[in-house]
Length: 309
Image (cartoon, rainbow, N blue to C red; front, side):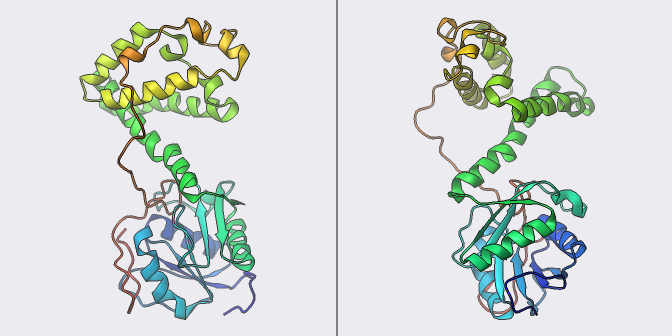
């Protein structure tokens, strides 16, 4: 075992949890030159190591950290939302994972890091760089994790609705995703290049209330009207932003007219008072969707528990 705060090649790292991210991290850290133990499953005892990296559901972190603590120098977790109350550091790769990726999946992505001490944060940063990620810090973990969910989980919710509508329109189900995927990719690329306001096109941006009404009727036939209403209201807010005088004048944009002259499409969308209730929790151990599935009981004595893959 190492005695300094640095992570030299040969540092022993125990990966606790064999879910999606745990499997990928074990392969990648091993490729980076570390001595990796695991990923450990629920029926395996906690070995002695330099670092224990917990890839378990957020609710299991306290118990599993308690089990791991006597066997290691540092304990870290890979949750984007959970504070550091029970661990020394955290590293949260900002990506979604299936568990089958090769080690280069981490190259070039961001990884949120934090530590209870400067030395612990330095270890998290070293791990992030060893994986090939770009380490960064955040001030508010809840807002950061919500951003990750919007950028990953909720995107899937939207494209699933698009898939349902396209299939109902008569497009063969085997072709729907292949036909919609280029549109999704281009929209994301345009957003990455210019931001949502400049990338926005379509009937709401043009102020075409009649088309929006027809779209809403089609969505309602599939019980998607609530989702449509919420998205339409949010999209209209993007289209109505007044911080860009050129865009709001309609010059060179899809809007084609001043925002003040656009038909008000709000009669076709349900106005939502206050915040949307109900929380979608995602055990993001790598993304914003690198989800570790299964339940870890993690008793405070005995062996650490690991989620079933």
